[in-house]
Image (cartoon, rainbow, N blue to C red):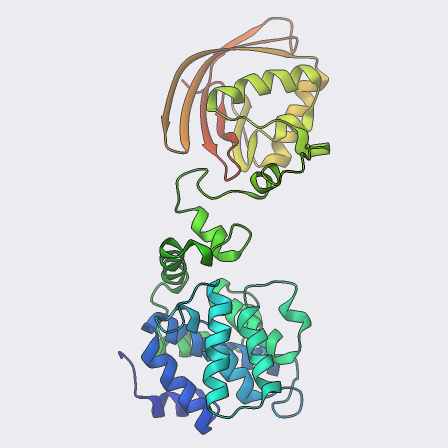
Length: 348
């Protein structure tokens, strides 16, 4: 350990001073690395602060010991002892339930702790399962993503971080989840939070997407509506689809070829950022009746990034054709389609 002994931490943070709380605290301290242990304790401190902010009273509106147990044990699935064949949240819930059962905790309270731990990454569900489950997720979310941090008392986060350092928690925790999933892929099925993390660390296409799963279901379902719009399977196809959508006047198709924070230069000296601004510019291009011809000059691709240059000939937007050399940076999205990050037809 790199901080105070357990007793000073309990005194300074005012943790629930019961034998069961101390047992769980010592267990997590022993079983998990410091960044997990510190995060688990901080999550309770923030959860308790949220309860007070909401005028909830310990012992009346929620079980304070149970809230502490739920928070301090919520990532025990990332320990060696808690690492089974299920997603880490469920492994953790089962490990925590077994620990509490051994210590004679009644099944009603165990069930609440199980829900809090198993559902702590499940937005929209944990909040409907009772005060302890909801507060645990709020405290955990504050410590990971800063959710509701504005409602914390002034200075609380600084004080608790001085006692229990962050140690780059968000990334360290992500790495721990991915490390487990790489060795046991069954812990990270594609539609889970661990699966979403794992997908970023695998070769493109190794982890199926939702639409890949639908395609492999065997029922023969075909895309309809917006999903039916084709995606650019290669960097070269982005330009071909752009000219096709422009001719068809398909503004949504054109916008689909840009990332949400993409940069676009529709005319020299005009620099747009974001799909809403890009949509307006592209709508003006569609309304003008413009047509575009692209001839590929060069392409350089490294993994999921491509640099593309075309000779572009734009007609119909003005009295004379506009000929330019484009500079385009494209990125492959998680669904396999390519889209613009930067589209500048006038950068030479």
